[in-house]
Length: 344
Image (tube, rainbow, N blue to C red; front, side, top):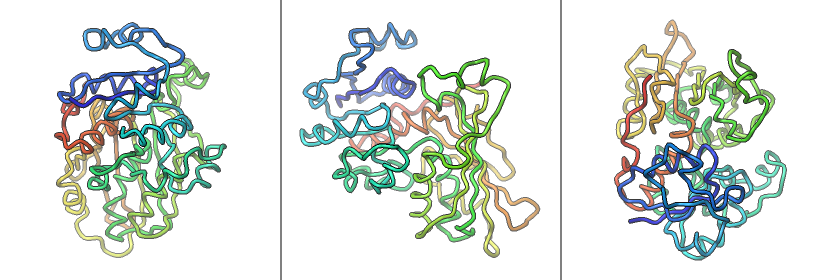
């Protein structure tokens, strides 16, 4: 049994980790931390977990207790993992960070986007970007995983086949993305109130969103060069889900795009390329660790449109983190992640 700890267990990604790990046959959650809720039982804060974690209580972060675990998840705001990750790695504990702390390879760029100096630049060379569809073998050997963000997951998966094959103009790529309100976290914020977010939709971060450099970094790796990306996120009145509509300008005749996508993801257990002409819905991935996508070429013209949907809390966060854990410890990739999506 693999012993794991969770730092920052009171947010949406923390409780989603607990939900997924409750059905994991090879994992035992030994420690869960929260400075604000220390001493409170997990099932007291989250009644949906009654019967699963009745003896587990939130505690203040204790490096010694965390280091006794085989792996520790960080479900924390940016900057927290910087302070503890190095110490845990020195003690032999593997780290899976759901925050943005280790996603960008350039510490100076991280500072520009997050407004503070990077707290552990010496660890950046070791951090493996945890997108299994790209870095599966590196993840198996990793000690430190940077779990991709939700928007970056949906956008990168949707565009990878086109950029890897050199089929679109890499200088002019558009990602028009929509997210549910849980993407803003569990903290109380006026824009996330029901009366503010319901029956409305708005764009935000149009002039620059923190996920932009992460997406450009990953797409650049796929294209073997810089990618010019216009990324505009939107807030939609739903709880969970990411819908990414992606546009690329074709460079010449692309051949069978449907076959390209099916072949690229044929061996990927958590990517579902839907039949030609499909329009995937966010509700079809609710609660599941899967990215569903469809590729279109309107009017057989020079534009390709890819539709990519995920659950932002699962494939876009906690589910992807569990997938990384499974790979790191040689477990079945489906362990804890085999439940289908919830409908309606």
